[in-house]
Length: 309
Image (cartoon, rainbow, N blue to C red; front, side, top):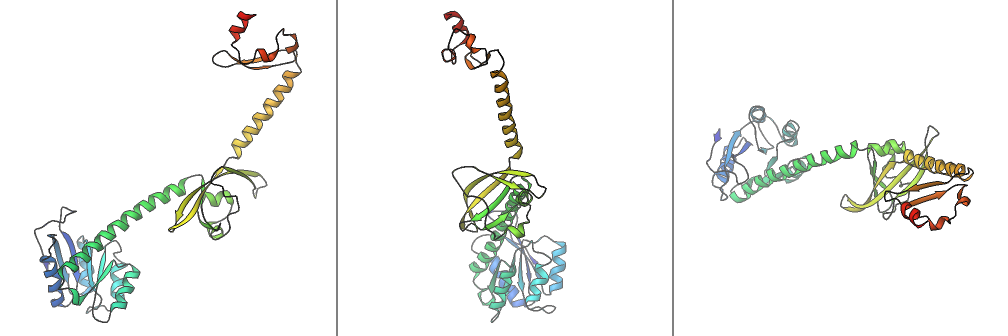
């Protein structure tokens, strides 16, 4: 049976759809009265199923916002009742109705995924019933949004080419993304709880050299920033492969060194100007032929030098 009401949810344009799976007509009536006479003005659509199979069948046909579930039904009993519903519909918040002497069982269902539980002897407390249902739906929505946010963040973390490692204050690794596994040639399972093998310096970038399994060397640039992990202070370290950059810098230095050696042995004068015409470089074996000392030319505008001399 379904009972419809007129009022609207404060944070939704439609009534909150409740499925009550309960075989006791008296308890079903108390739940209906609690929702129908609730002081908040919220609106509910209530569907009652007296058997577990009837409730499951309704869940396959109609969208439901929250389930109220009695664990002891004609066709199911105890914790199995909860698992039969939750495993099929983990995406619907569920509140367990607990009878006398079943509080431990109700707590077990909450630990396993139920949002909350209500004692049947409290069903006459309309405010409590409505508040429990409302909070259950609210908590579920918040957790669902957090899950979406966490999934998006994990996608970003796992898609970056930089290795990311969380290290606790004792220097133990608590998390490593896929890129870190590749850079360190070690699986996350082997890294977790191991000591972070590199210096942790939050004030500067650190470069370390690793010998890879293929015999080549790899240079990692490591940046460390303070963070929180499982509500504890920790460090977030990023590892970037800068081997190509370092090799390019080394090649450039060597190239400049060779060029200077060539220039210093050839009877020519090599000079360079910046955008304003100032002399920024003055070298060559031909410098002695100048009538001016090099230090009097460096930093001056080439055209001013011509005018002066």
